[in-house]
Image 1 (cartoon, rainbow over the protein chains, first blue to last red):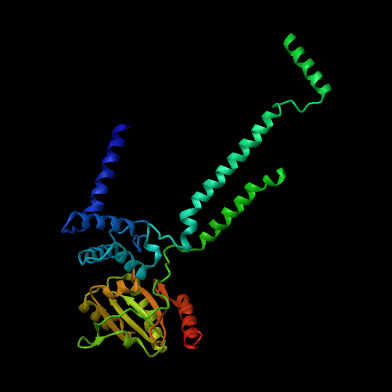
Image 2: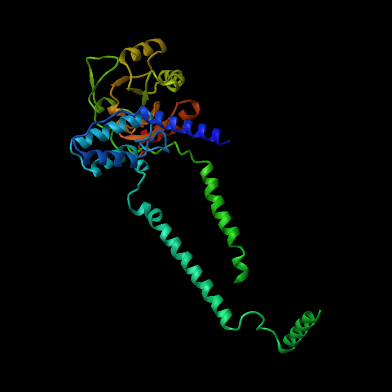
Length: 160
Length: 178
């Protein structure tokens, strides 16, 4: 069993190696530009193969776009310029990290709103529980006769 | 009050169900063109069929037309080519953009399968395609008489797609396009 697993793992690793092997090598003048290139290509989405970023995709269009990012960075373009270049051609869709604007407020702030609602719900539930406990807990809402009967039954139980 | 809370799961279910149901009819690979209602991006490129001639976006102006992005390496382009020929015969103006292709092969192709295009721009490096936001051939655009992009279709043009394109072209030429 473990042997099979080992082989599978090995196969997976081989695959990962092969997937990256076709990607062209770019040379950078300095480390900072290279890091920006990595960052940008990781955050731009490939329009053709939609669940890949352009850094990971083998499709010709992704390779063109990598080339374009490389060219622009070497010409001294800022990150925003590169992103604008892509957005004017392929739309907001290519941004894996969408910009904050009216369209994306729900996306960016929605989770915090949901978290807030969740906290409120927890708070109210906790409060109503505490109130219930403060009032004496279970069984306190029994009439005196019911209480007497209950005690009688419990006594009976103990005797048996 | 308590009773209504019992309907909450149903309401949530209906809400999620609605969005998932909507999702069924949305094709995520169909992207709206970022260039919609914008002038055709600037270019200055050689013509495929008349290499000594330089084409610019001005060559696309004058009438409502289709712009078809194609290449010989693209099997779907071959599939739609016969239909384009038929459209050209009907009198539809079609401009071609030969995208990231080898000119020799492309000329050969037009000789063999006939040429439905009024003009063909040679976009060997794919720069024009990139400026247009092309992400896969074939793509077909509707442009108006001023060369403004009005519609984009990704994939082959067939009778069904042509109905949509024709409707857009009619709408644009009747002046209501804006």
